[in-house]
Image 1 (cartoon, rainbow, N blue to C red):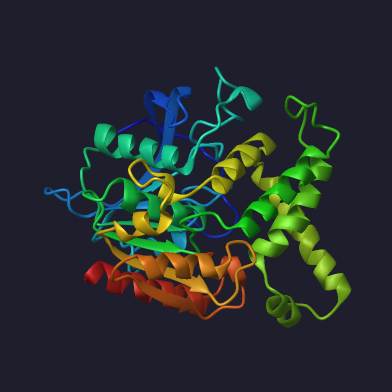
Image 2 (cartoon, rainbow, N blue to C red):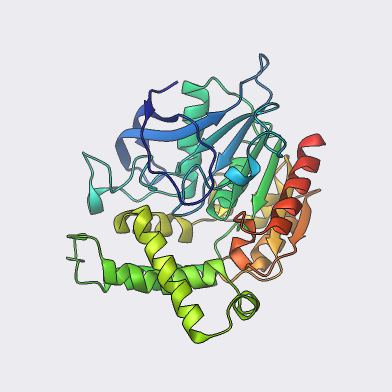
Length: 349
């Protein structure tokens, strides 16, 4: 196991555990480029059984960390460390694993572009080379974490027994691409952008980014109507989101790179499938659970339905939420209970 290291504390409740960084050497990307001196960040909860059969991989969302699904981890929860060995990983480009913001040899815009399959490849190296894990009881993730989970099931069919993908897409929807492009334009319009990178933190760009992304990814019209009674309350909420984002210190270069990976995702471009997204999904042998709300203004719910329709024997669960994309964010007690129950059923099968 890698040595412990410090990491930023997320807002709100979280499950603490020693944070580790595994030095994996150079990471070859599917583009042919290489991330030099790659480090894979992760935490673990629980103990690996002697037969290695109780490992669960938890994948983080875009702009998020290994704490993303902490609301499902802990005694009495679906991902109990008393039963499972939970490995929660940080995806490439989130500021903890190797990223444009922390690379010494390839900083900023010198960092090579990567894909969601590259994230999966890096995680597989961590599991096999550092943790000695050859099979997974499940891969679990929300948003980009759910996209990674589906890619895991396509890329490593013999390794993955079950998949729980929340608000996922097997192929990125044009709407999601448009949202991400809008957020990038918000950042690139800031005077801190030089054409070759950000000379400083683009504060004005981040404020515009919060208005664009956080509104679409965190709420729906119904949620705003229920939660706020006046214009002033809505504006105060957006101001609060700006402050939270600033406190997290996420780097603008990292957002550009992760959002490019998000936009380019398609399990159908996995080698051997010739761009056939439905065919790639049909190849999945893992027991599959897909969860999505009625309305998602970031990852349209029809993308989740498409995945469920093409994975044999999959189960699609509609989350009883008006929080949209954040239905899988652990914010609502009813949503958490629904996710926890569905995940328990999947893991008991």
